[in-house]
Length: 611
Image 1 (cartoon, helix red, strand yellow):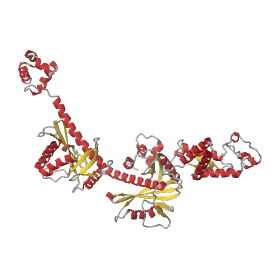
Image 2: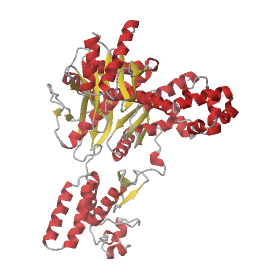
Image 3: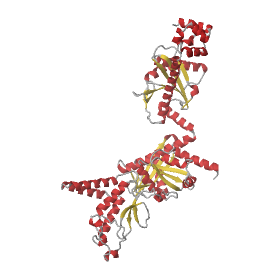
Image 4: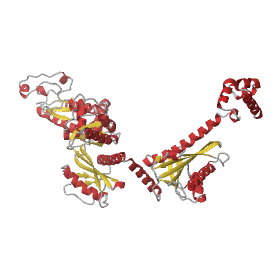
């Protein structure tokens, strides 16, 4: 790979990372053969994955990994724990080449049941399947210790590391240890507990570790109730704590659910602008998500979601060799499959899986849109203009938008500002400032009419391009007075909208029409943010002009009105006498000594008249 090709590859990968969400999830790196070479977890996907592409990364292994990456995908989940469990599930399935997390000190603990004659149950970070069966890993060690404690209290498996054999037990080689005397072990090494009873206890412990704890939970609950009825409240409290630990361990999540064994989950999200649909596929095996992919389908004949999903499901199931008998879908399907049954959940774990798939679809759609707009910024501007055109039902695309605002203090220093946005971007060379000339006192409506009249009368005389949309910084009143001038006096047909604010002076609605009506617009949408920016910008522009004008007047003095007295002379007088009052009180001789007789005569005569 040449240097130029490598730079293009890195730039392409960085573009993918820039559009990743700041949400928990699992990410996957692919090589040139589209084989997963690394699976990771992250509390914040964008922040974690971007760290691989920082220039200061100096770890050799990280550099080697980055040099092999050709593509990146990820799965969004709701919690950090789900991200961890999903990562481990994917690592077990794909065994990526560069995953070394299970080999260093950062691995999460698991529970092992050994293959010994009298098996032991304990936690470990060393995974070697020759020694026994491993359950986990556990991201929340509290849950792991709760399960271990539960198993030890219920079944009392041995904790010693002594290599016990059948022959040794028959020959009486072993003696009861302290654990037996304090009732933490039933001493199977001495024959005080039969081999059959011990193995049955271990079998039940395996079921608990597999997640089959509902029957056990019910048993503990009933025993707790019985102890309470017998007024044995201390024992009942212990059972209550144990019951709560079991319930906590059995808590549901989107990634691991003990009630779901083998299902496929399909969700679909539309992209109306590009005639495209995004379909997310999740496969759950033994209560764990082990596959999650999103596919893009281009509509050819305006197929419905149902038709498109029905076409995609067999294709995706064949690609991933899925034999699941149950397929979770978001709506009723018109067709049936021979090998599986469709199911539309209304609540519970399966509904949560459906919501997880929809969340991944929407995130994938958002990422694709951001990547396209990153390569072509004009695409975003056009999309926002089309959205505004559709919301207001305008005849043409609102390319040029103008907005007005007034600023004054009790009618003094009254000014106004007009800002222009072209293609949803500020065109500062077209901004205009206006001193209010014909309005006396604080009359915002009359001031607005004067500015609008002057603005569009001049544009018509010069043959300038008129705006496609006028936005007023106010509600119904501002829109009404602007319409009187634009349509009534000037005879122009320019759409007029208004941005109204709430009691906290925050933009909360868009008004349009005659009579004006509120346009439905989500306050967290990109279009709403652009409109809010327009309103904030015109407010800033008018306020700044007003402040500049006030500052200029505040620095004005009686010396500024004296003909023949320039800045240098004024500076000499102020340096000598400090203020205008002392200059007025000074004698002719004192003034002459500073600025000369001729200028002293002008200052003395002017200040005497203005006294």
